[in-house]
Length: 231
Image 1: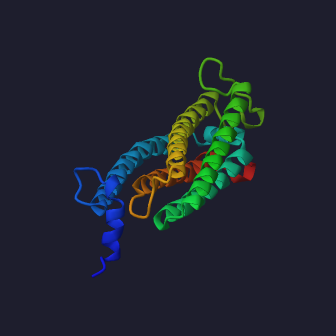
Image 2: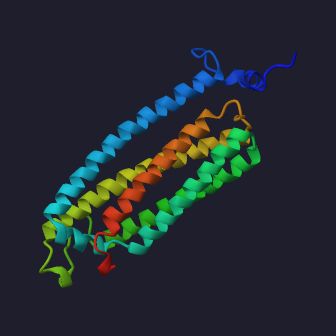
Image 3: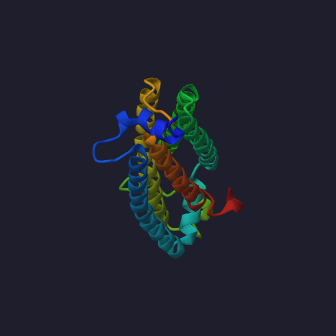
């Protein structure tokens, strides 16, 4: 009698099953659980930063509005659109891996990589703008918002910029990790390492990428949209 289709699929991916697992299905569940546990720790990490930001924003609202108005609204908006598109291409890449469309997988991963690099390029350009304007927190920080002097304090704006660099810098670091992981996926996909029976790395790195995108979806309004009327 012919074998059940799922059994045949599992046997086709047996070479990728680590010795501690009974089959590919068990390995996939364990890998996904491990990624979700990791992401839960990341949620707690960024959650602490978000809470600190909200507390200080309440204490120095006018200064945070002044700092927000110093950010490049259009770069932040374009980067948001770029990351949303990258989440879409990554989701399609995961689906391509699931159905065994290797050529589409390579293409979609490459598009996701390019979008990630575009985001980082625009973010570092924005950092450079802050550097030239002496808006980097520290001894050389300059408060130059004459139209908001009666509302904001230099110390409060510097605090906003400090939190801005910490949160967006950590996000950029996670983006760099994601770009590196996607580069590895592309290399492996070109070798046809992934099959419908075994594509755990594509799924888990996809989850990581979506998480990083979601973090930015929170950062964008918190940092760039504090006072829309002055944008």
